[in-house]
Length: 321
Length: 284
Image (cartoon, rainbow over all chains, first blue to last red; front, side, top):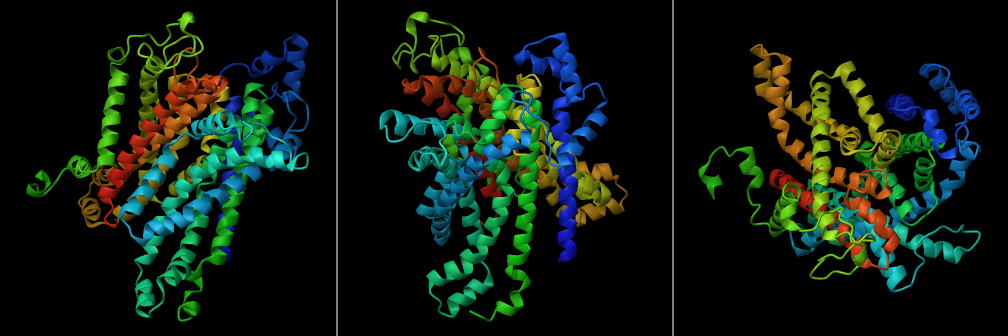
């Protein structure tokens, strides 16, 4: 098992290396002069061009530039914002909590819907309830999250005037307003996730309910409730952990969109803002950090999975219940 | 019914079988056919030009004259919806096809040869999948000039690893099968085996994945256009219309219409994709 974990760790490090290359070169290889692109928004003069060129290290070859950048990154220095001149890492860390909060709350909402729905659908596959829930799920996956967000603003802010349309206020400043602003972004994201997780819960339950040991449990006279939760869902939950890892990229994509719709000033909002202001060091740093986080989370989930997977200990627990 | 008299139904027959009995799938087909008409012959469906500015009719609600109302420049919203269909489908299908052209051969190579080659391809796939799709798309689009063709390239770069993964896992099981062994023993070249023996047997998961990725591509494109990073105004696009509509939330028809168009399109593609998958998945 240890060698498997080490192998995964090595793979993750290789992937992170390639991620750094893509995030660096995607911008550098773009057509056009990066300096003029950068200066286009903040004014232009020959001295500025020269100083910026040196600052960005653009007078050197691409390889040297990359090595310079990655050297800094390894020491926790992602460079400085081209606009505000603050360290990129500080700007990102300041925005991080808002995004993490939004993601966690929406995942909880998604699971709260998906798990009961998936279990109910798997109880009688092909019947009306299962079919209606599947239709809901395909709806949830097809609806553009930004439009769902706009519809919610239309309904809850403009028509009913229950909730503020958009913005972000820190928890410490005004907890009630903070929660009010969180409701709509978290629900729009949560509905999408519920739709995705639902399928995995339903199909995972169906797979497990078809196993011989479930029949044995029925034969032993266990109540359906116990069978569903003790045998069925417990195992499905492990699949769900893998799914959470696989879907984290999709989740972050959704967060970027939702943050923009509701002006929730997290990482996604930061990314789009840095595109608008052409703050390439900030953009590059944010994307690198987020993608590395995705790899790291996946690696941690693999660790968790190897610890939790009952198949490793199957022989010991099989006769237990 | 024809299926029963035919002992060896073609792929197309297998996919389409039962599609008319499933009302949801029939609904999806009708929507998609309508979209194709929108894309090919937009002038049949509207008498207004999408860029025609009518400053006397700014933000008028839906009426017999403008069935979906007008936008802030007095442009007919229905006309703009109709004329956006072409670019949406072009980017959706184009990026799925390009992703297939890149992703499928990589999947075949990785699955068939294994070893070092597989590991290299796996690292490429893992790297691309580690970027949240929207972030990677934003990163590339922000540096390159957004136009329909560059959007196709960007979106297919984000999506091709999904094809590679699906094809690779199918090749792994197919290459142990007798007919592949037989072809190998009779001296058929590896290239021929991959493309003429193995690939045809992967078509079903490829089609399912392809429909899913077309839907994803449309969501990414409309998302980018909504951010102002996709199709550039004044050219109409569903995402771009929503971007503007957000400033005119007091006129609800403006923000409802384009979103409904995206939803119906993506929904129909997903329903058809699900239908294919269910037809071919014996478990359910």
